[in-house]
Amino acid sequence: MKKESNAAESRIDGEQGNTREERFPVSILISLFVVFWAAEIFVTKLAFLAGAKVIPLTIQGGCFALLTLSLLVLPSRVFELQTLFSEHRGVFLMVLGANALHYGIGVLLYLFGISMTKAINVAFLVTLTSLSTTILARVFLAESIPAKKLFALFAMLIGAYLLTTNLKQMVPGKGDLLILGAVLFWSCGNVLLRKALRDTPVSGELVSFLKPIVGLPIFLVAIALADLYPEGVSRMFKEPLSQFDHLHFAALGGVLGAMLWIFLYRALKQAEASYVSMLGLCTPVLVTILAVCFLGETVSGIQVLGAAMILSAGVFTHALAVRAA
Picture 1 (tube, one colour):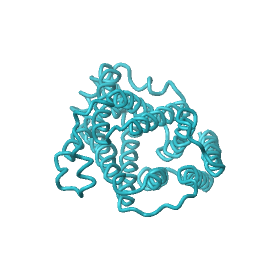
Picture 2: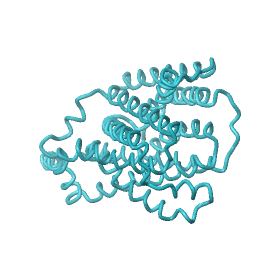
Picture 3: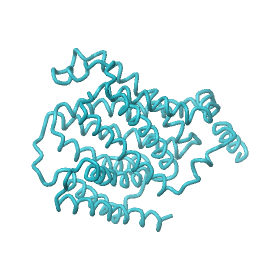
């Protein structure tokens, strides 16, 4: 039976198998994920400061991400894709569905939400993804949540609140529930993908490649239905996709997005979803550093304290994972 199982894994992985995904320690994979994610957020911020519109930038960035993944992933994963589709249809559908939840519905709810609430609300609410992911991973993946890990999580969330809000009052907006919905769909998507990556030989690279293939058609359908939305949202979704003044930002953001997906799902192949999500909270710290260095933004003592709490709790979380390994 073991020989048959190994043969099945060999077929789905192809000749190269998953060893390429396991060359780097999880800590390095997560660090690269955080770096690329922070860079992608910063480039998006630069695009908006230059006058880019949300929907054209999102669609164009997704197209460049797909192009990047087609060049980096597809040549070495064609056999795996064929085998996954023909011999492991259930896993294939799980990956497609999880990517639809994460990159399709989740991002759509996020786009709806940002047009209906304050930026300060969005900045903090998205950090709650780590909390919802930890809860869902406990329920559906039986991941452990020891008291020390829970303490570190709440310390990071408090730090994220201080960093993103600077203790300014958050006025509830209509879009807050939509942002929380996006958070829930992002968490559901990643927990399902962690299950697929943990329990089957499917590679993180192939999961990344399938993400824009599923997400972009969902965005296009949402654009086609723009007349049905409230006025502010409808106006945002009706922006012409042929706006190419900020194409260079879309191209760079797409490449960075593709890279962050690759390293995220390589990490989820090896590590618990809660662990990866918690260390992902270090991203706002790096974004803040980039904004201070290149945009001349200033930070208060409260924000520095928040950043220090996030980083300290992140180091503590990593130490817990190393000790448990």
